[in-house]
Image (cartoon, rainbow, N blue to C red):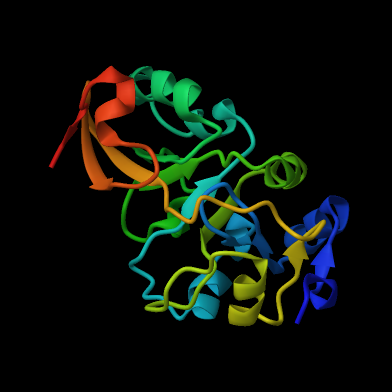
Length: 205
């Protein structure tokens, strides 16, 4: 199969598809993503065959759309990192206020937030607002590395066009969680090295 045979939608068509409750496959700078509107995120766990206690990541096109969800205290710590590494391969796990996105990490008030360094996907995010995302692979299967592998994993879902996608890094984002003022915990080492963040290691563990 070539990319010519893959089902894809332009940004405006994809925004309509997602806002009407569909799921889709998107390029990012790290790995291809499986995405849905937050109100329709339940299908992502089902499609991925993933336990519902595994959280999703909320992606958006701009810093304020994400950091406005947390407290002023947390934002003081998160904003310098966001402005330095977003768009990019750093996921910040922050306490989120309100119920709007609570379902993306069931039973917890913490949520992973990221802006991808992928122009096409940020254009889509500007049209849709924040989207619930995860890597585009079935649970327990290695992550898809490109649009062909993502479409093979989820053949019924449209891909964001145009195709082919730019080649991603193939390495997942680094994930750090806010603990208390000035303190972060490294949850996953990824494309951004923890000892580079803020010029010194801010993370424990």
